[in-house]
Image (tube, rainbow, N blue to C red; front, top):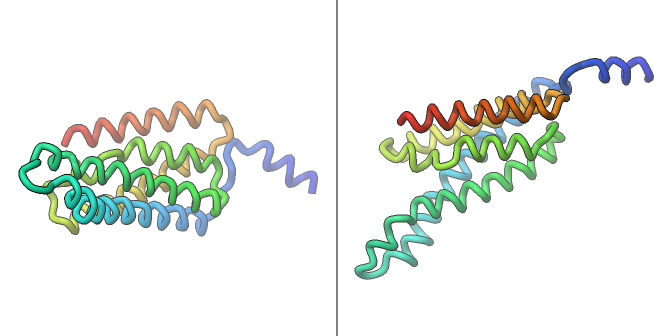
Length: 162
């Protein structure tokens, strides 16, 4: 028992098996679907119905951003809950990094057809959750923080080139 503890203490990262990594990727895809679907539902049936009555077109222009903001926050909560349930190492960092890096992805993909927006959100969230969970398993907190900030900046830079 003591030999196993010493071996785990010497490793620079927390071990993760393939089934847990696959569950993280599926969870990321589900969060991407939730963010996309909820932003469409909130925009179409809630915010547009409330803010776009009559001749008030000025208040009607920001409904997509408001819907996506609400959907992203709800999706982050769902992702955090299930990452904790999966016992992923540093789940809050994973969720924060994925949320910050993919903030506004539905609006950025707005020129695509509806299925393209949904597919891009699903794939990008799955990739983000997998990549950030992979980085967050390092034991050095400061190294993880620097790497996550660098990855977030890189993703935001690539998304801003659109």
